[in-house]
Length: 359
Image (cartoon, rainbow, N blue to C red; front, side, top):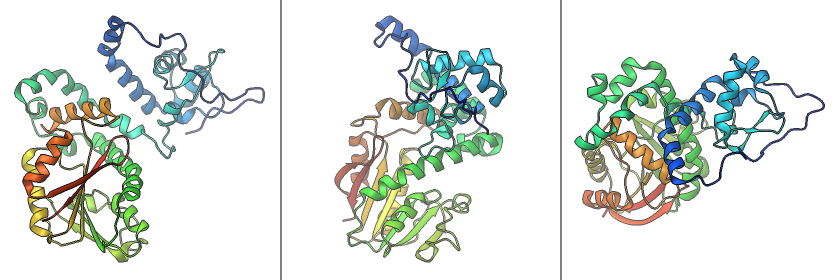
């Protein structure tokens, strides 16, 4: 997408104060009104992402009319959209009525290295607007409302009836994995480890980052056949790490057919208790005594990202009946499986790593 071209007499404004006309601390009555209208904020973020407004805006302030020409929108409604986003610090507005980037608006650009464009789209996909209003039903029943709402389970619906949403999901998960892979690789100490496996590891971004950092280590990627078929290019035939990798199509809930020094399990112990139990039992069955197991998960306690993780926890309840863990609940499940739980480390603002050993 092209961006709005700079004009010679315009000075770029990068991070102006957002929405100075909005009270910094609104009274409780207004704050509750704002929260009740939270769907408007989510919808505005989605609209900006789908329109590509952040990609259209360059380093020079631009008017809504200038941006509208680039994103094929009407100027007045686009200005209204941007005005709403400015209230949350997503874009800023100059005294002359032009719009500029902020730290958050840059994250909606597709070319930003820390882009959250696809994460933002995933969290606001059309099906989400169908299930959120039924949260009270899920809280009463303690189970997913997805089958009753759509006539089938979440993943069946996603892949059979919502192809575009499935693509957004894949892009969002890839983005999230790529961005956290370096954090994981920077945290984990692989001293004495010659082989590592990424269990349910998706496209293998975490595994690739670990192997790049540790040239003597060999790796195994295990995930469903359709997932590993799209593995990170570094791991596939011809990739620079391919000679140190084996790619194993399979379901970790059914079997883990190999023995390694370290098993990494990231963000897959949240769907339901039975899946968690079966996966951990398969790890214990495959691993030799003394093998390390590192479980990496979002927590709904003891984290600076509580608003994000608790929201994801509720969405998991709605779509699959799953749950994000507390520190206590995850330690309990790991211990019940027979693992010896050691230190717990923050990976970044929204992930924790639980170091375990097979007795």
